[in-house]
Image 1 (cartoon, rainbow, N blue to C red):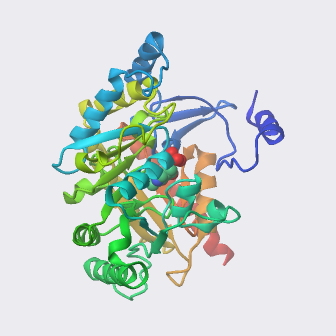
Image 2 (image 1 turned 90 degrees about the horizontal axis):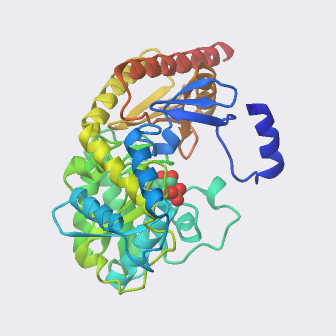
Image 3 (image 1 turned 120 degrees about the horizontal axis):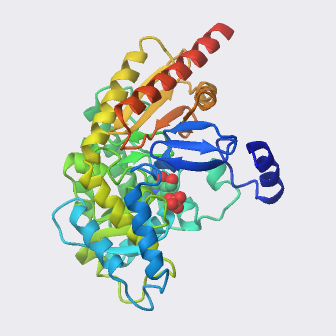
Amino acid sequence: MNNDELSRRRQAAVAQAAYSVHPFFPERAEGSYVWDADGKRYLDWSVGIAVMNVGHSHPKVVEAVQRQVGSFQHLCFAVGMHESYIRVAEALGRIAPGPSPKKTFLINSGAEAVENAVKIARVATGRQGIVAFTHAFHGRTHMTLSLTGKANPYKAGFAPRAAEIYRAPFPYVFRNPFGLHDEDAVADAYLAQLKDLVKTTIGETEVAAFLLEPIAGEGGFIPVPERYLRGLRAYADRIGALWIDDEVQAGMGRTGHWWAVDRFGLEPDLVCTAKALASGFPLAAVVGKADVMDKVGPGMLGSTFGGNPAGCAAALATLEVIEEEGLLERAAAIGEAIRARMNALRQRVPGLGDVRGAGAMIGLEFVREDGVTPDPELVNGAVAHARERGLVLLPTGTYGNVIRLLPPLRMSDAELAEGLDLLEEAIVTVSEGALAVA
Ligand SMILES: Cc1ncc(COP(=O)(O)O)c(C=O)c1O
């Protein structure tokens, strides 16, 4: 069965709402590569949207899952407890940001992690208000799409939205409205705006939590400045609110640290993780300060599949691989190489307006000649060109004008060089074509 035949069957049988960026059907994947139904090989710099950080079908992950399902597949933690759930909680408690003792609750997806973090924050504080941000993506369940910032295609038509959610401007340095260029000055301006919004439109005693991605993922790989996160931590403490850190996309070693907030030594109250946690098996977690987590009584949270044994086995193997193979250091080194090459490319490609991110989570924002108008056509063209040449990339961003780079962290130097050559060729070819047409 080839890509075309599968496409026809998909169109007939699968809901069109389940959109796919690339018109191919992967049949096999190993390490940094994927093979599609036509037998074509691709270097995968999307890794299932930041999931396969340790590469496809890592033997240790495969072996751990096979061993687990050979013993038992499912009982449900609410029925009888399995040790691997406890081991995942212990491991996450050990690597979670900050020195406070931690406790963990396991579920299946990023949206469920965020949704449960909101429930925990409301019970723990006895307050209701959740401050989310523009450019945010927190999932597609009813609560999380209400927290997500982008109308189309995530929210429009799905109203009414959940109540007691407030929206503050995401600290977007490249597109800040203050006309400032210094990162600290931009952070201060956005912080002042946030505090004013809380004081004047919500009330400082009404806020249960601030919910923020440390690097906005779907919003365009936009890193929050360190000064803003420090200010947010201090402000939340002052008004008795919690800080929920959504690390669903940025966490699990992607940024060269276990968590993006580790770059600054900060400790959120609650951390959400999913995606790369279990290398493609549905597992997600809320990891929080023990005294906050234990404000929620027995039986108040739960899930049939949450903390499923196969997911836990995959997570334990994934965490081991990241540690044993030095993938935090590798993520940092990969990121440095990509950033150096892309910053140099800015000399040749005037539309490459911003190169940003942390570790191996890098966004390339494209703009038109005026330096600000988003250029999604260039991004779509470059992504399609790269795919034809054998490199899988993903677009992102509120305006669709960002290429997000999510290479596998075990990638060899040769694979890194191959990917960089294909990426550069795609950007140069499409931007030179666009210039010629203009
Ligand atoms: C930051 C962030 N939070 C939450 C989610 C939702 O995760 P899931 O798709 O597993 O529900 C995503 C998914 O892309 C995400 O990037």
